[in-house]
Length: 309
Figure 1 (spheres, rainbow, N blue to C red):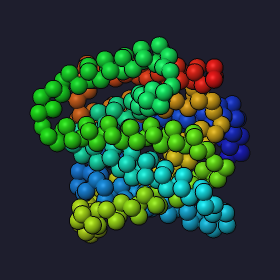
Figure 2: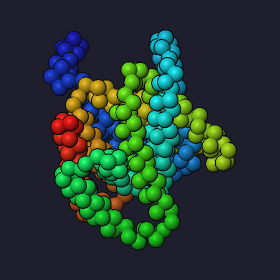
Figure 3: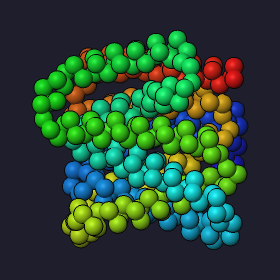
């Protein structure tokens, strides 16, 4: 009986393919991390949560590869790892987690999805020509963002709400820079080992900053719900999902890999409404759909330009 079940599962996996399953995992579970982050930062300083998460996740990765006797990065590779640690984990992950302390997890996820817009704008300032479809996609996204925030105009009068939006937008900007830098400095070094080192280095930097500024609480005062959030973010968000993301990135075409950016905010918005009672209004649904359409147009245009080049 066990053999038949095992055989049936293997057949389905082979039919679908491990890379597709990895992408499905990323698409859903990265959306859930917004919920875990929102719950965690309710009861402790956001950057302390990020520092603990990155330390535990990074330490697990690094110990694994040290025990496997994996070669350490060469001198030139350390520079790339340090820059990506700053862009992707200190700034992008840190600021987005800090942002959901002041805004809903659904809004945070929607803003987090617009990083392709920054990629286009950065490319424009670097002197690259923009395709008409990219410009159209950006305008569509802007229209969608206006619709989403049409019901939050009064919230902009609150300083904490404006601060949360600023943090979230800055996080997407640094993520876009991280993506562009990764493409430019693609190295042969083990990407999983690199990921662990980036997490560990970012946690050391964050612990130094929050220690110097005094923005921490004693570990004994962190409530159980925040520790559960950290555990979920480490195991599911940092270890399993980042590994699945890299695996999908290496084995699937770019047009498929970009799907996760469209599904993550949908998952976060729906779960935020179900678990936290966050508003799921017509404006959020309509604006979210329009933003995703615009993002698809931008991503399609970028892929087309890359093929033509």
